[in-house]
Each structure stands twice: as structure tokens, then as C-alpha cells.
Length: 275
Image (cartoon, rainbow, N blue to C red):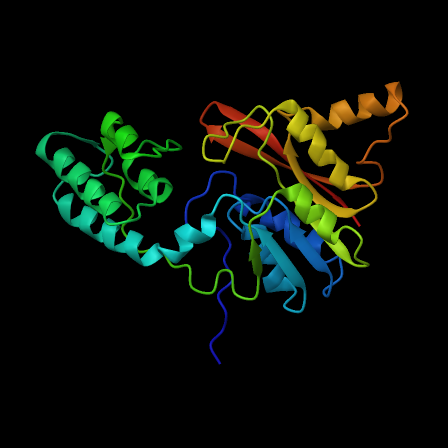
């Protein structure tokens, strides 16, 4: 019987995936039921859902794929073929150097051909052709960007990543209402962070959106992810002292991790969970 691969990072690039938090997430997860229903309200790359299913094969795991990550996974073979072609184009080009001239034109032509064929994974290809943490989301953007030879040298592998997981694409509020009254349900709540870059997410998040999310934490079991940039924790403490409202984080456990953006910039990632 073939052993199922356990992914420690998302198989395709995704800004905001929780791979660096798994060392804290996995031990905390062991405090919950192995047969509960886990609802990943802001599924993102699906890494949290995958981790739950890997630890608890008998659990029901609902992955809310609002960013259509599954479409990227379904097209991984096409993306690998494109990367293979790009490696051939850049075979004699210096690694990590700016790509100019005829070679750049050849790359743009190849990307254009891929888009015209029906699908181009802009985020994954951006990670191989653009400066770190930059993304293009259209051919028009790619034509304007400075390209670099940082093409991945191995193929991506997504086999079995979402096996046994129920994938949906709904508003998180609708999903919450559907499952909130179950006897054993745990919500995974990882919304786009306030005051951080959200270009690779669908839509634009305002303060009201972040505050609305806090309603799913009221009288539920959850994992909630935020950062010290958001000041959400301090805001909830203020609300508790100045209004009749309660603090949804009372009685919860907190884990932190330093996230490095570049050599002179970092912030604190925060995981709060209530059993």
C-alpha cells in the first residue's frame, strides 16, 4: 500500500500559507477530537486542511477554496510543462540575473502562447520569473515587469494533497452558519491579515470585514490567525473594557512566531486557539 505523502508546505506558491506555523499548529491540534468536523473558513492554500486530515484521517475536513487554489492544482502538469520550456529557454543564461533582449521576448511569447491555450498559473510562474514576493496577474503585467532567471529547477508535485478533503467555495459566513451548531466542530480562521499585502487574495478587506470575522469565534472552538500588525487583540481588549461586549479571546491559548519579510523587516505572527 502506497504511503500517503504529508506536505509540510503548500505544493504551489501561495502568499500567507501557514507552513512556518505547523510546528505550533500540529501539537495544538492534538488537543482536539480526531473525529470532529474541521471547517477551514479561509482555506487559502489548503495547508491547514491537509495537516488536519493527515493527523486525523477519520475527521471530516471542509476546505473553503475561495481563492480557487484547486484550479491551480488541477493544472499542475501544464505548469510543469511550461516551466520545463522556460528552463530550456534560459539554459545558458546566468542564474538570478535580469533577463533582457531576445531571451526576454522568447519568454513573453511562450507565456502568451500558454495563456491563449486556456490556462496560465500567474502566481506560480511569477515565483520563477519575478523578484521575490512580486506577482503578476495578467500578461499585461508580465510585459511591464522586470524578469529574472529564478526558474524553479524541479517540477511541482501535488499528488494526494487534497485527498479525503471536501472542497467548497462559499462565503465564509454561509459556511459558518451551516456548521456552527454541530456537536463537534472546530473552525480554522485564517483571514487575510489587516495592514498587510493582500494583492494575491480575491477582493479588498476593510476593517469592518476583519471585525465581522470575530463573530465566528463567539462560543466556538477555533484556531484564529493574525499578526501584531492588525492590533485586533488589543482592539478586543479595549472593546471588553469600554462596552458590554465580551472578548472572544478570553480563555484561549496563544502561540507566536517571528515572520521575516526581508533582512531589515519582520513582524509577529499569532495563532490563538480555544478548545
